[in-house]
Length: 220
Image (cartoon, rainbow, N blue to C red; front, side):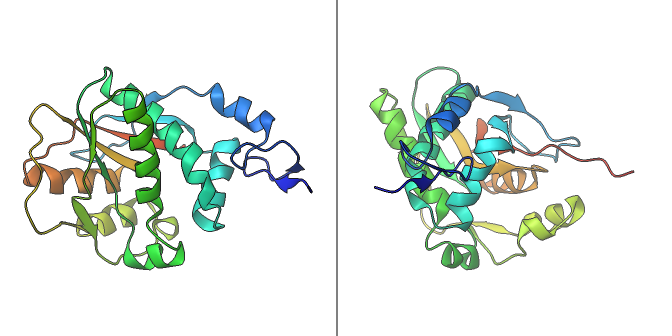
């Protein structure tokens, strides 16, 4: 039984739990969801909560999950995302989770919709805690450039026409709080664009829950 690389610190260590070593598990457990808001915030961005800053073990886990095929990390990351949803909503009650969809190109590169997997585990965790939860893939993504390659203006422009409501009947959301799910928030352009689509179909988001928020670096 050889040590396996921890997804959080990239060290080969024994005793991993769901791909993460005890030290990184401890570092993740001390994180608490907090409200976050990009500056400037785009119009129609709903209130947003994040588990932590995009750095340390949280960043490494997201990279390992999204870009290095560590799909088993969906379970612990989904459980962490459930904590953020609970903080965003504030009290147990009916919730409708709407994940931000991958583009077809990104889904092929990652062998499936990475946020869809996180959403399933997030919903299971909330249901196990007694929350009435539904998941609705209400939005589809059109092809667009990878946001990693874009600046703030480019992200906003790409997000404006990047999402469309899926055809068919939207679910009734009476009494449910609609929560958008994403992995990372940077400028907020993507969440704001999805929020516009949902609002136009009568599902205005109550809030958004993400795992990590990037810190804006000011250019000199």
